Image 1 (cartoon, rainbow, N blue to C red):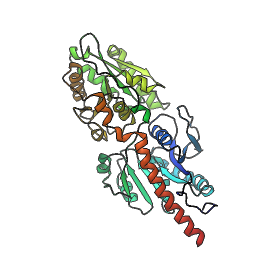
Image 2: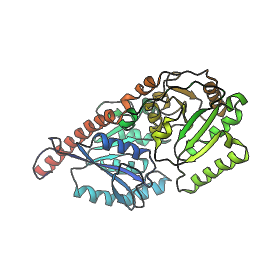
Image 3: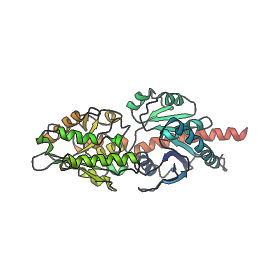
Length: 390
């Protein structure tokens, strides 16, 4: 309990520990945490639990706490549980020293820690992925001290966890407010003299399905192909499969002569600048939970082309803010690229595209998180007061 005996919601600053187990500063959840940090800076101190080898490469800076055994993903059931058991004493010591901290877990690798902690204290868990084993998440969501956040209605249906305000809430990922403040682009009309620029933005990893863009271009009619230029921006993570996948893409681009229409541009520190030159944004991955890059594109007034899966149908108003194609279908993607290149597809104004995701701005989503943190802090304070009285 606080030494002054006051509730942490009575005007005092809140402290939130985000369990991520991140091993690389490669966007995703960390981009969301940066947005929340900026949006709630006046009321919340955010700390992020990461792996020991984590190196911070992006801005704004995060206050990180390193762990020898933290894990972000689930490489296998045995490794998953073993690493969680090893991380448990570290986490317990940290929270014993800081009993007022609110715990917000984010990844599958930290899920068992969140579940164990919820036996004795309120815990917030945000599900950021589509897991195949849905039963354990459904069971733990019903535990008294576990508060669950799902990103979209589609995710709630996937897990079979209905929204229950105060217990299970649907709260979107978010983009920094500055994405909503940049000048909107002027919509360019397709013509034979200038190709349309389609931008993809994300890590070169296999599950992002960038190879689908290459497959689709080979299926395009010559007239459509000549009117398109696809640029894929993003780093290659340091794991072996990512390096292999990036090599496969480069080999195909050169070997099949596709580099005329598709370019791998590498990492960028200026995603807003990259997005500002786009006529359309491409997201080929299947079961993308709630893409921050997609929200950023729409906030920039850029229509999107995404697979009809995951959270995408909840974010994209088809025919108005973008087009959807069938998951893992190069033919369907090619058809939609042809519609864009030929001018058959038309979209709402850049202003309308931006307004479609206004409720996913960091200031809006941050206000919801602040309210949740205040509720958890009040519950934690009550538990500590009862414990001290006993």
